[in-house]
Image (cartoon, rainbow, N blue to C red):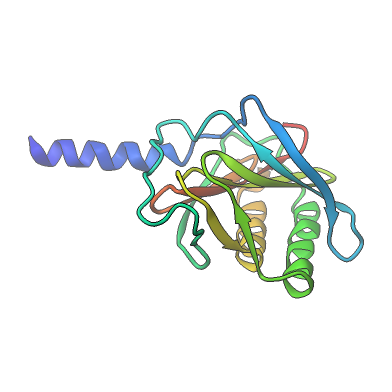
Length: 182
């Protein structure tokens, strides 16, 4: 019976990541334009909800010090069925802006605790990094660029999908890629 319970818990944990997230009570804290051409809209956002089925983690260290999650693993999930996903070429513009800012502003960015994040939009592509932990996180722009390109190319109509996300193994954060009109 214990094995069945563990297997069921694992299956439910894996399903959590496949859920398409929608920011509830979205508040835009700040807006800027990034990249070499300043054509990618970047917003710091706050949401009142977390990914369904997720329980926020308690701080394991001093919550005033960000926890660096650069290079941390995440699991990619595509949103099915096909139809309405972003153009991977539009997502590549955001990915390039992240790389440009990584070289010219700095490789890291900070996200404050509890359902706060950074969202970026260019044409049909909308992506965001959301902190679900109860403490601040630091992430790498080049890692976000890599994840963005991967999800945009591998979770599109030709794969019977319309975007997707990549959820951290410990579920403290996730990156989502979707159509900007979704």
